[in-house]
Each structure stands twice: as structure tokens, then as C-alpha cells.
Image (cartoon, rainbow, N blue to C red):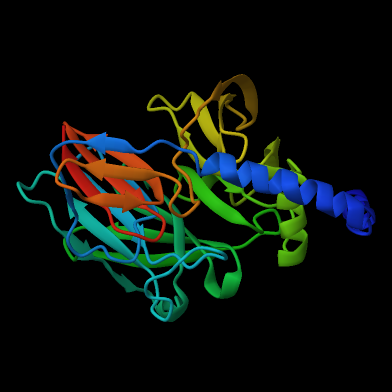
Length: 312
């Protein structure tokens, strides 16, 4: 409530708005000054035309890709069709993508709008896919079980919580356990615009489990991507507008302790046309958001554009 009152009072000052409007524009201009990156031996992935906003590659070379995100202010090449999860086997000589079917009577495929994704494999080698979903501009986490033989996803559960209002990305630490980034503090689009205009570092990270949900890190200027180290000891959080990567130590009780901050000039972002990747064959990838490597093979995703596959 205190933050809402403070923001309302600030919003009443037109002069303050003008001053911060120019500051906000300066921040966006700085994002657009990212230098292009050139990569050899790269080709566009056939079958991806409406984005590949997030991806995750399993140790066996299977890659899961979220596609078709509709997000405020972000271009969409197919705004009237639902999003989808794609599968790609990087062990193949010429990898192609396959759309995974979704089963489960309670899941509305027509409103599927996938954002960040993460996988978790349990002791029985059952693989779960957790997906940030934005049906009707809301935020949920959809829990699926991957059925490898059928090449499909079985929907198990929809997760909602008041501390998960503006989810962007997640990293799974259990079948129903994850850390998630909220990229805004406010739900209302008008108040969200004030967050951006004023540079309010109020976004935060939440730990979720069926028995406990709590904020574990806060004070971010647009908390974005999140990931965990292979040994599970450290959590990495991207602060988009501040161009920082925060490194946290993860404890047994799931709390996080800040260790250090890395200042990065080029964070893979969700700002269209900010990050451009150029291949030697002339291919251009716009709005890159994610990249991952598997045995000398690089896969790069975008928020609304295509995907690039490179042999390093």
C-alpha cells in the first residue's frame, strides 16, 4: 500500500513526469546501442516462425522450445493462434522441430501463451516441464509430464498464486518447486508504465513450493531470466534494464544470499530489434532472448522472430 500511495503522489506531478520521461527514453536508447554479433556455420531452424522465447536442452540433447509468445509491446507474427512447445533433437545430423501435442482434459490449449520454461528430472527419470503461461494476460505456471514415446505433454496442474502476478521466467528445483522472476511489481498496465518511466527497481524473485511461497530476492529493475548452476549451488538472475547478472548462493532452506553482481553490456533481452545476431550466410536474428550449447552445437532463440542453429 505504501508503494501504491507513493506512486500515486508521484503521478500527480506533471513536471516530474516530463523529467523522468526523458530519462526513460535515454535508458531505452542505451539498450538499442547493443553491437551486433557475428557467428559462423549457422542456419535458421525450419518450422520456427513465431518466436523461440525460451529453450532448454537436456543432457541427452533433446531441446524444448517455447514459441508464439504474445506480450504487451512485443510484435507477434501470428497473434490469433495459440503458442506451442517444440521439441528438437540435437543429436540428429540435420535437426528439425516437432510440435508437442498436449493432453489433459482441464487444460485450455486455445489460450496457451508460453513464456519462460524449465525442466526437472526426478529419481525415476520422469521428466517434468514447467511453463510460464499468460492466458488472457494473466500469469500461471503449467506443469506437464513429458511422454517421450508419444512425443507429447501430459498436463498435470495449473499453479496460481498472488506472489506470481507478472511471471517472466522460472527455474525448476523440483516437480512442483521453482524460483520465478516477476518482471513488474504492479498488475495494472498504467502503473507498470510508471515503473518503467521512473526506473523503480521493485520487481522481485519468488520461491514456490506446494507448502510454501515467499519472496527470496527483490529490488530489481525488471527481473528477467533466471537459471541455476549445474551443481545446484548458485542461482543467476538477469536484471534487464540495469544490465546486470546477480549471483546468489542457494541454501538448503531455499533462501538466497547475494554473492556478487556482474555488469554485462549485452544481456539477451526481450526488447525487439535490440539484440541482433548475424550469421556468415547473411541470416539475421532479431530480439534474441536465450542461447544454449550442447556438444559444440549452439541454439539461439528470439522473443518473436526465428531461431538459429550453429555448429561451433
